[in-house]
Image 1 (cartoon, rainbow, N blue to C red):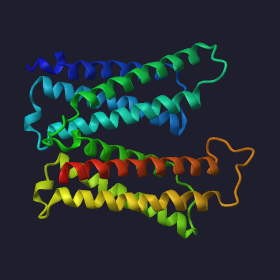
Image 2 (cartoon, rainbow, N blue to C red; image 1 turned 90 degrees about the vertical axis):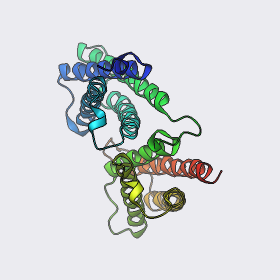
Image 3 (spheres, one colour; image 1 turned 60 degrees about the horizontal axis):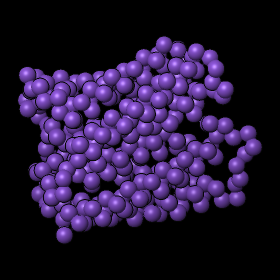
Length: 279
């Protein structure tokens, strides 16, 4: 047995994440109030992160991970970043959708407790990301570096954008933005998968410089989306008075902010990648 899987700081953070995600899932399940797409997403996030983190701990405890045909450090770094983003999203979405005001029933109290525990679970995964992040000069595990972690962030934000898309047909400007989101998401996801699967070494070109060029291209493409998406979405359109959670205007506003976030992520990614390769 590799007891360091349980006694190291990373192991302790994972144990806390397992306990907290399971507790948040159980509290919400006990209320029976988690219907609809938002509740299903939150329950999936807690359950998925609990199951995968438990599997990681068991594989490291019994030292079975070297037998897997993947880069273990890249996989665990990418997953910890993904889990932190998923739990953070659930910690924001769940209370905004399900917790009523005033909160004076037993069901609401359990929902509030689940929200607080979910926030602590996010801190546990954020701590794991910080503990496993590559030190300056160490590039043995790409997805543990800042550019690698940003790749996970960029792919996740693109998924959030896809979940908010509803009406963009017959508007060439909006269709271009959707194409930008899709192309950048697919390429970024392939980079993550190839890195975890140890396939990047088979690419017959200077990979580091190709990644820098891709980051520059993706940043420019997102820059066009930052300008075009709000122009065509809100041109001569004010927010309807009865705009609810599923209102198209609110969804377009969410896509606008997420587009800006991804543009900034690709910009920072380009700066760090250029520094790593050329400086």
